Amino acid sequence: MTLAVDVRGLNKSFGDKHVVQDLAIQVETGKITGFLGPNGSGKTTTLRMLCGLLTPDSGEGEVLGLDFRKEAERIKRQTGYMTQKFSLYEDLSIEENLTFVTRVYGLDNRRRRIDEALERLGLGNRRRQLAGSLSGGWKQRLALAACILHEPRLLLLDEPTAGVDPKARREFWDEIHALSAEGLTVMVSTHYMDEAERCHDIAYIAYGRLMARGTGDEVIQTSGLVTFRAEGPGADRLSRELAGRPGVLMAAPFGAALHVSGTDRAALEAAIAPWRKPPFRWTEVEPTLEDVFIHLMGRSKDNFE
Image (cartoon, rainbow, N blue to C red; front, top):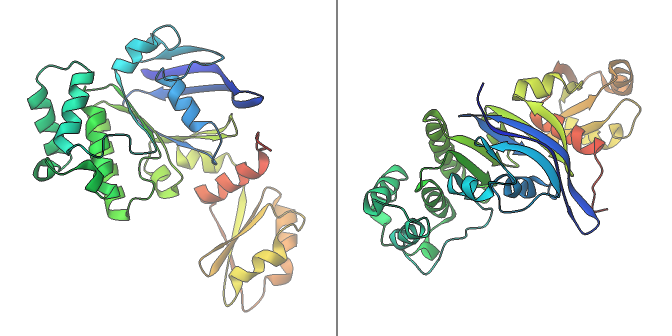
C-alpha cells in the first residue's frame, strides 16, 4: 500500500481553542477518503494543514512523500484545494478565470490545458459566460476545473457540494471517481451521508479528535450499536417517549418510521418493550452511517462550549 498522506500527532490551536488534537491519519494513493464530522470539528483546519496553507503547532509525517512541515511549498504545487466558498473571480468569464489560474501556476501549454478542462467538465459551450452568473452546480464544475489544471496528485475538497442540487451532486461525484481511477488521491469533507457512502473509506473527526476510521461497513460494524426500527401509525412520534430512557442512546425519526439505538442490547430491548405491540412493527436493522455519526457526536464534547 502506497500512502499519499501519512501524518501523526497533528495539533492546532487558535487562542485557547484546541481545534485539532493529536490527529493521525493515513490515506492510500488513488483512494477517495471522506472526512466527516460536525461543524467546528477541525476538518477544514486539517485539510489546510495538509496542503501547507496552515502551519501546525506540532505533528510530523509526509504528504505525497514530502515532509508536510518542511516542504509545504512543494506540496502546494502538487495539490488541488477546493474551498467551501466559491473563490474565483465572478466578474471574469469561465475561460478568463482558468487562464488566470494557469498563469499563477506558471503552466506551459495553457490553451491545451484549458480546453481539456473545459471539455472534461462540460464547460466548453459556456467558456465566455461570467462566473458570477453561474448556478451553484456550474460554479462547482468551474472550481473543480481550476483545481485540476496543474495536474495535481492530491485533491482536497472542502464541502464541495453544499447547496447543489442532487443531479449536479451525482455528476460531480462521477467525475471524482473518474479522477480517482486515474490515480488521483482525494480527501473530501461532507455532511451528506450518501456522499460518505460513495467514498472508498471515511474518517470521522469530532471537535479535533479522530473518532472512527475505515470503510463505511467497518465503521458501522465497530460502532457497537444495536438498532431497532419501528413502523406503524405514529411510530415517528415515539421518539419523545423513548429519548433518555435507560439503554436508549438515540431515538430518531426516519420519515414515518423510527430508529432507536443503543449499545446495551438488553437495556435497549427493555426500553422499547412497552411499545412492541400493535399497531407498531419492530425489526432489528443494521445501523446507518447517520446512526453511527449521531452516536459519535453524543460521545464528543464541543471544544467551543
